[in-house]
Image 1 (spheres, rainbow, N blue to C red):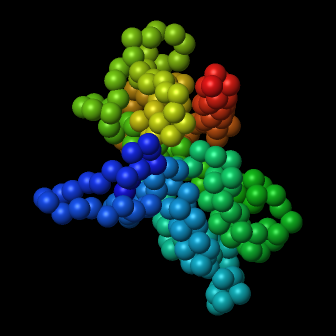
Image 2: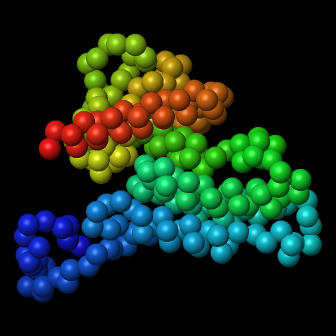
Length: 236
């Protein structure tokens, strides 16, 4: 796969064999395009998830718990394979992924008139966006020590005392890489969360945190990336 650049006619060889140029390639189940936007991958998994979404009219049991169990078992895993790699950052792509669960909850008994947020609360489900955020933080926790991905920060400003160094970037694609985007959210977590002694303890403390705080941290980071992108764009 070749990125668009000035040397678009460049050729590459491997053991004397010329490699063909492609616009996208699949690596460990994830489709990677030349722009590293992962839009193609997201479109593919969303389409597959919609096709796999349980048809409530075909189930012998119309109990909400049974339908939710089918969704969690057969549909949600399609949308949560390696999310740290392809997690969307644009509003449109985030809504596209969320549309699968939104459509499913609308089909549940007595949920048609409820908003998406109230439907999730009623059936004790989390938004897919929140689940991806928690997955990012968990992967970050398990890869801090030892790690070639993250570097400790010398900053002692507010927040927890074990901050990671934030690698600022002017390139939007890099700003949304897992190793960059997760740092600012992780640095905003309370001391008692980041100091967990095990992965299970960390997950338990993350789950006990109020959803609004986690989403506030995530939204603040997204706003920072947006402002940085606009500032860089106006400089040219």
